[in-house]
Amino acid sequence: MDMQTSPATALRIDGARLWQSLMDLARIGGTPKGGVCRIALTDLDRQGRDLFVQWAREAGCSIRIDAIGNIFARRAGADDSLAPVMTGSHIDTQPTGGKFDGNYGVMAGLEVVRTLNAAGVRTRAPIEVAVWTNEEGSRFVPVMMGSGVFAGAFTLEHALAQRDAQGVSVAEALAAIGYAGQAGAAPAVGAYFEAHIEQGPVLENHERVIGVVQAALGQRWYDVTVQGMEAHAGPTPMELRQDALLAASALVAEVNRIALDRLPHARGTVGSLEVHPNSRNVIPGRVKLSVDLRAPDDAQLLDMDAALRAACARIAAERGLVIDVEQVVYFPPQPFTPHLVEAVRANAADLGYSCMDVVSGAGHDAVYVARVAPAAMVFVPCADGISHNEIEDADPAHLEAGCNVLLRAMLASAGVVA
Ligand code: GLV
Ligand code: MN
Ligand code: MN
Image (cartoon, rainbow, N blue to C red; front, side, top):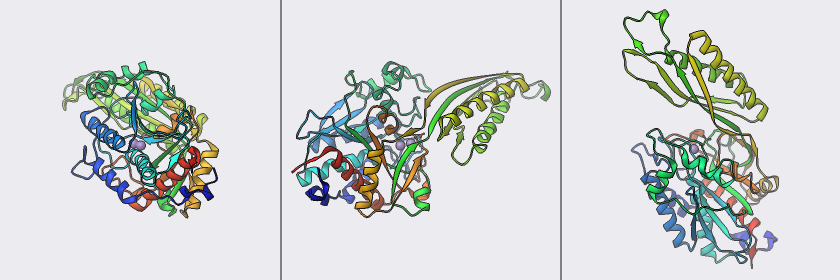
């Protein structure tokens, strides 16, 4: 399909409508600081899902829900036997999340559908908008759970069996919100595009509107348990303690060091700490902590894994306690599909938007979808590069630009019936 001669070339999304959808969705789980707390598979997640399903149905889409709760809203194509051109992201958030992380990609997909409807454009291939389950990995690990099952990165059974800190399983939580759908093989996807805020400062620093995403960092996540011994904070001499929190603190510093030793791209974070029994006058007997390691190169990520294990062994030996390391997430760095990446770049340029190549430091559903379909991402800046924070913000004009690029790239893949 020659886009230059197509009336679709003149199509533009409605930026005000996109913004309004984002603001309406952000009311579900909205926080006093202006952020969103809509944790995966909670009742607030259900409310967000229900609103999306309502909007998608109003836009003429049919709805399909799979066994891990991914939602697919489908706008029929002229040839409905073709594999759909898909977009989407997630609407679950971090506990102190913002209005845009994930939500933008889903609302941008809906805006593409609404734009095609308003202009009466028929695509040759169907268009689908996906809402992936539990992308954040905050309540349930692994992260990017719905897209991971879809792409076969891990099994449905593994995902359904995962439990949150209260012992509730994914299967139970899905059933409770009414989003446990049909099991079955994942259907083929013709092409997948995901729009997302950058969640870092590069685009803003370079004053660019569109990030052409080349790849995403690989990640390894761990549950680490430090087993010491509880004892009285008063009578126990300092030299006789097996203080699990003290050992964990040394490990937190080591994780930071592991990344600092591998700049500029490596990352190392301890984001969660559970101290047992968490009482002021008891020397901590057990600490569970999360470790999140990221790198652009799989060999470097493996080297960081070795450094983490060596640090754990050394700290355990020095302090006379036991440290157990369990890896709970691993995916290698994921390059995106060259011809779709080029389509993002060409359409951004065509539309007159400044753009630059970027690498994603965050994980995204596109990372897993890229294993089973051609995939690419469109980034737009966010204010001060801040995300996973209630103050997360984005310029409506940038969101509109990213959605226009998404629309054009999807039309180029799906084809337009004159
Ligand atoms: C997803 O939010 C990630 O942690 O990269
Ligand atoms: Mn996200
Ligand atoms: Mn996120």
